Length: 109
Length: 179
Image (cartoon, rainbow over all chains, first blue to last red; front, side):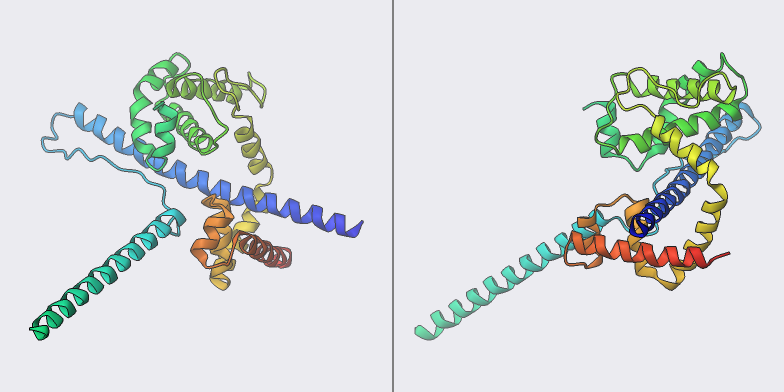
């Protein structure tokens, strides 16, 4: 019974944690969308006010801002680095083989 | 490729989507109110709903994204005016946005507990960085255990899952200690 109660409390806490991160995520998205709306309003006002001659029309690019790099991006860069390493080793081996072949050919004469 | 599929492939840039449909959605909603700040608030919420839903592979739309955004905004207008029930359904959407609303209501109800947890989480981030990163990746970034394991150096997904349970337990203890 107590085990069941503890499990129940753990589940409740997990839900609270989920909501906490969800609230933060929604807050961040809302903030960025507000910035986007402000930049649109600035552009509208600049168009309406002819006295401002050289208003730079900025396009704000809004991206998700995570505290950590995304796992897929990290894994992709790791894969790329590994592929590059294999390529380098292969090239180096081929070069050594060619060099050895040239040396052997030279001394065999 | 449908609009929704496009959105799924480029789910980071919601600003372009915001600009793309803003004028038409605002025009449509001006029959209810002329207050642009109010409309912007509604429209921003609708974009957030759409982006959250787009991540769910089960989510499908039989109407256009613009129609969906307008429907959400209209429902929000009625809801805020007290003329619609808290939970509503939207035509053209197979999994409706009720769960988004349910979460929002729960967030409002549990505000004080969530504020307390935020405080604990801030402290937790400084004392247990790796644990915090694991929880952040799982809950905030919605990454799978296999991805988390690969990135954070755990041997497999089960190991990452066990570690998450341990971190959660540690955090809960801190939360219970906090007054």
